[in-house]
Length: 184
Image (cartoon, rainbow, N blue to C red; front, side, top):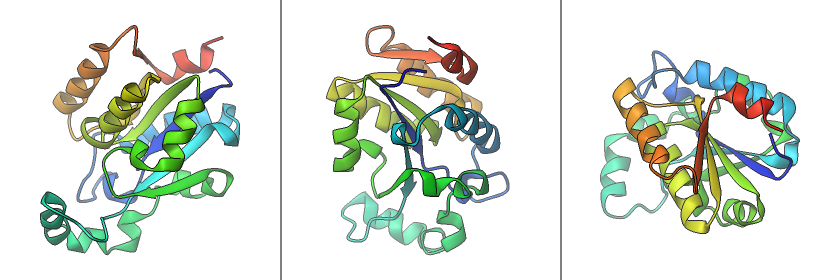
């Protein structure tokens, strides 16, 4: 782990936990890996995001809001997972209504200043990948932590990782949480 890394924890919300409507393959395992990172990182290095339905949706987002109204309006579904909710007060937490965390101007500004952007969270093939691609488009080197990210199934997780591997080694690095923590 480097001191100039920006660690983005993408959308680790209850709706993605086992047994919930949008359960990812291993949200709980990703949360455990993220906690290991948080134990070593300084609070200034960490950003948490929460996906919140767009207030004034356009196009396909209108359909999204109509289709998933029950989830969008459910406070519990939108809360951070318990492991992170307990610790969230120590970090910057941003709401977002797009897939990419870097559409939030404050996060984009922090990413531009970072040595690298480290992506963790859910959903691998959606919000995590969109965040990673936007970071690359900003000129950031992205670290993709395979065990701190979860997708809807193995095939989609592999697809997201393959997309990131296609950018390696110049624009991305793929590693596990332990490899990241052991880095000098």
